[in-house]
Amino acid sequence: MARLRTTSLAGKDIPCHWPLGSTYSLGEERNAMTTQIPYTPPTFWSDGFNCPFCHAFAKQEWGNVNKIIANSNYGKDADLVICRCSRCEKFSVWVNRKMVAPAAVIAPPPNADIADETKVDYEEARTISCQSPRGAAALLRLCIQKLCKQLGETGDNINDDVASLVRKGLPPKVQKALDVVRVVGNNAVHPGQIDLNDTPEVANKLFGLVNIIADVMISQPKQINEIYETVLPEAQKKAIARRDSAQLAAPPNAGSAGAPPASVS
Ligand SMILES: [Zn+2]
Image (cartoon, rainbow, N blue to C red; front, side, top):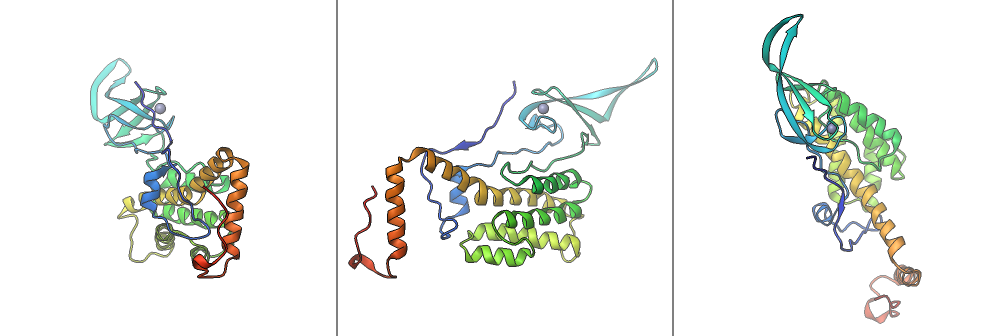
């Protein structure tokens, strides 16, 4: 029986300060609202993972293959294994404990809200990540360059774009994630202290970071805005707008001596 994991939202209001200010913790945010789909990469003889064909988290069934040539059966090969997805019923092929077909893609799929142009680079990085962790890291650096552009920056220089986003209130943990992908990606192009071919797991972690960045910066604000627009009555939205414009107009440190705030319960 296939098991499907789906995106879920906790049923409570989440304060969203982006882009006006940065006060939230990425960890707290992710506990409260998770828009990323959980991803379990294919691993040898595991009874469940995200299928490389249908992408669902599904039960997997394993078996050795009989080597049959003409009328001769040469028996089972311990190093040649096939795995059947119980959901889409397609078979992956594993040799020496590594998936060889379909193309060994173990990195998670991209966040759905990433722009199509960026998804192309992300998918190419997934396809090559097992063979070339360096190439994947360089492509993921390109992805965050394009993500910065999607967030309203120039996309010309990631370092400058991150600095600009920080000035606008970028959450510190997202800044760290951006800087990790930027620095490791630079290292892939100009080899330095990190040898990605010796540590392919580092490159694999970058995929998760790119998705976290997109989740916090694009998906969560989008979902909050959709809930805000569809759930709140128009009168309440107007009262909130009056409250916020009154706060912006108030002098600094006005304190309790200032005008009373608009009534928003
Ligand atoms: Zn499947």
